[in-house]
Image (cartoon, rainbow, N blue to C red; front, side, top):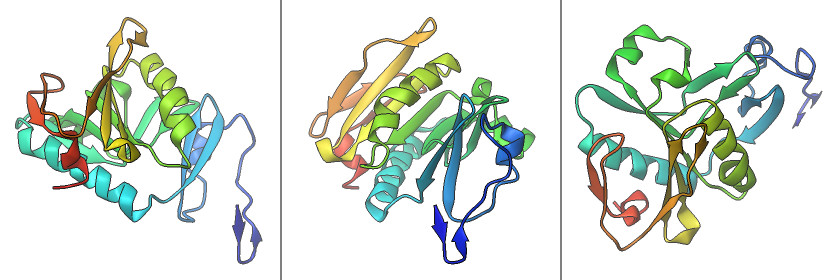
Length: 189
């Protein structure tokens, strides 16, 4: 990571903790921790943000009053694990009781929109990490596949094989609440 003034030096040293993360500069990068390892991502592209917005519209339209879809929040799974997923669904009461970081216990659904720079993380690393954190549902949205939605459901300590839902089909899901939509809605409202 290079700034105009030279390299950015981050406080702390690996393995990093959430406390270290809180001292990092606000430099336009997205810092996440996975078992103390730092993952740095640039801000999402316009197309990526449009897919997040599309998924959020689908979630908002069907959301019951006691659950709330949110974008890019902090989820602290442990002292050395802090994620910033593209979207989550949490109980509405968590919004008034949590200021900075949600716990995995708050999260009913966690979702990522796959980008060229994050595909390995979203397809493998995050599947393992989110399951280990006990998050019941993981949505992986692949915009370049039509889009396609992959839904992972927790089965014990791991996710079972994902169900794939392709653009052009009507999907009806019962979790985190009743939803019916076409994955094409994520990019073509």
